[in-house]
Length: 288
Image (cartoon, rainbow, N blue to C red; front, side):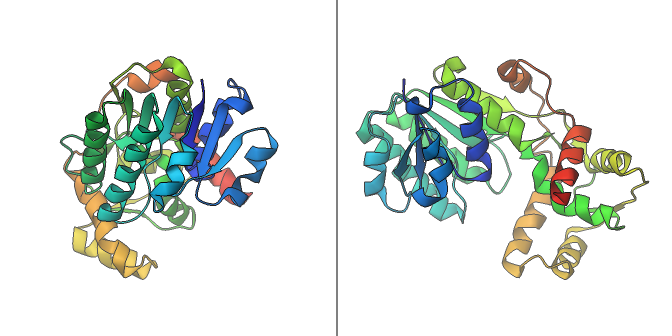
């Protein structure tokens, strides 16, 4: 069984590759990457590194050739670009005769109000229509997405949010990636949807966890979206990204990421990394 993963040199894909190498022979792994030179460490360990670029669909045919199970890691960029790129990857998987697709989606992608959801909803539909058996990993939210707020608190700022009492199923990137590796290694079932979410928590609860790790009280400052946007602009967030960060807060406030599910633990066969452990690891990593 040959397993391929896209984005193998990225923050998520590199952890998936590392996890797979613990249980899958390197010669059975294919890394499809836009810049093969960045994957020399994988090549040195025996992984078959291939050039695969979502913007150059012709490269994907060779990248996916002979692959039994394929992880498509969702791309970065605006929604239209991502939908086009994902469609190219699914089409190439069909041409290559791939037997199983694992896709990193988002929580409740089929009906979520999150501004990212249309990309994932469209991609899930492409995969369903392809006829290839699949597993959708509907990842809730990376704890690592909050590193800016955590570091601001560490520097003495309050925890700023416009998300109100909305809850998020935060979990670490490593836990999400290790769950993907489990499914890719053959533990996933055909045409499965996994809602991968940590225990939902509010912004205030996460701020209290951060305070516990730092050994300090953390004030939570609830503001409206306009104020949040203004403060983020002052903190250096690019103007083009401001609507995105505000939309995330609004979606959380509306409950888009308040998802209860035990799928995560069932896949990992262990407890998730706690928010406290995750925050500690992030802060220690930032010091390194």
